[in-house]
Length: 616
View 1 (cartoon, rainbow, N blue to C red):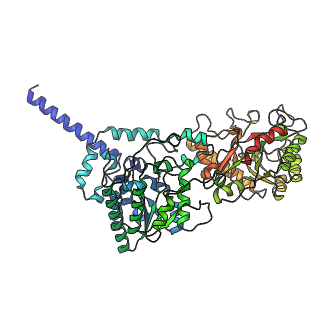
View 2 (cartoon, rainbow, N blue to C red):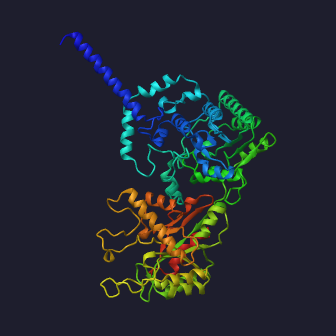
């Protein structure tokens, strides 16, 4: 082959390969900038670059929304669902990684000029006083779309056409690995624009030692230097002023929030600079400040030093809109104007943690099963010893409470008794009706029975087989107990606590974990159907609200807890041993509650020793 032909072939090959790469990047579109729907996956695309992919999404879906929430990533924790309710609106959360106020202004201007906007909420984060007009690396993940910046559209898109095709290959790989639960490559909820926190919202968080192990930044906060810069302050305030004026011109409700940060993070700022920034901010616009309060000192309200949990965002919005139905710490949230800013920053400088007893409670939970004249060291206790337990608790001043009372403490801040204890029974044995119920009534106690719905009333089943079932109380007997006000009936599943000898399948469902080889979709459908079945069965006993579950065998995983939450089961109990810390304003402290197993080997002295931490 001549050198000319070889060169022509080489050039042709390069052109074909180059065109192939361009076509591949365009087709897969991992950053969501090309607007076609061939392999559209907005959550993945927003994860790579929320600035560009969210604008692509809103350009196609702006008719579904009329209000927007803008700011850096901590903005995600102000729930759009709450804003929708308070403002009768349809919000979209436009959060961007590391957004400075110029990014926010560019987005705000585009929205105000191109979409219907009733409300615009801006999160002003303290780092906005550190950085302005910056472009972090890598540029592909932080580039603002040309519609907001005025950049040449062809030049902008060329960056994504000519990028390393491995970005596109990664998207195809992620598609094959995608699951129902959030993964690192799809962290956004497409419909709301916020982070998809279904996994983090399902974390049990009550134990502080375990929490610090899971989130080590709070146990050993790193040294930092948080310098506020005058050019960043000026740029931020000027951008806010322009957004404010454009909202006024267009009749848009303009609201500014200052997000909370963890106390150790605040310690590395110069307080005079902080005070100056918040003072000057008040001269631009009134704002709601949540940045530094008693909340800042509780690590379980945060994921890290600058990202707070959704429950904190819910408390903040409840403060803004005067909703007193949920718990809010007294010092959390101040509406700041030029009239009170000096007083506010002076008080903020004195922020301190609440005493633990002011916002947490130690609550022991007892786990009983069956009462029988012959107790054992497993799960059976004699009626006589059970009565001794109840008498000892009553004499020691303990008050038995229902799970709903725990929820009222956590969600509404309602007081618990001085010495609360939760008494539970698993499975729904007839002995609970025959022995435990009268004893509870005698000593002014109450209990929650976690019922296996499919066995309710089963007193004769397999009586003459090698595996006779221990009798369970009937729906009528359950109704009697519920009507007395002494017993609450809750879920131990309808039929996910099976026992092998009684089942026709080789793979009985002994607990709520997925079966081997079961698909996510089939598993979630089965658990959801079980939730509805137990709710219906227990509803027939007069139990008005079935939303509490004791995991069969104590087994659960993240997918099961997420599915339970989606089905309205927001209080769950394990078989893990230990006392429980409830945290006001933190519904996750009601998940995975520990219990002490009661049987014939548990003496009165041992019982009182276990429950004694409740005195704190």
